[in-house]
Length: 110
Image 1 (cartoon, rainbow, N blue to C red):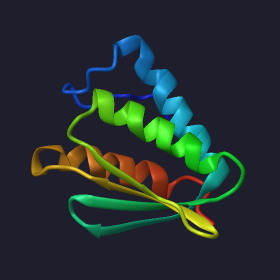
Image 2 (image 1 turned 180 degrees about the vertical axis):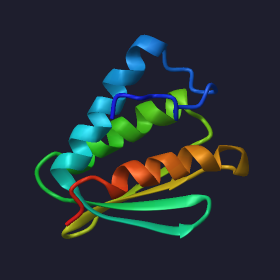
Image 3 (image 1 turned 90 degrees about the vertical axis):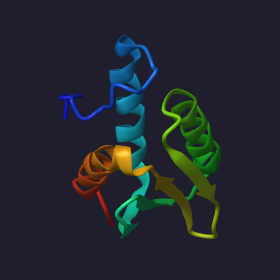
Image 4 (image 1 turned 180 degrees about the horizontal axis):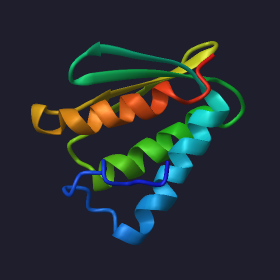
């Protein structure tokens, strides 16, 4: 999906960097996404298949995302088989979480 209209204006990542960041997330989801759940309207939980470097890659992306989109509350929890990424937002950014949830629902969920 090349349409970036779902990205919020409150994101401070320079416009030219946004497609690259989205591509990083898309690649990670395409390679590793195993599950996607919406435990509440303001929360999304993603499970990514573990492997060498997956947790570090996810932590790096999450840290960079939190730096430019401070409305995200991102928590990485390692596990034996899955590394979980919990994403929370405030009510103002629920539509961003909706869009992210829809994007992950269409990825290679296993």
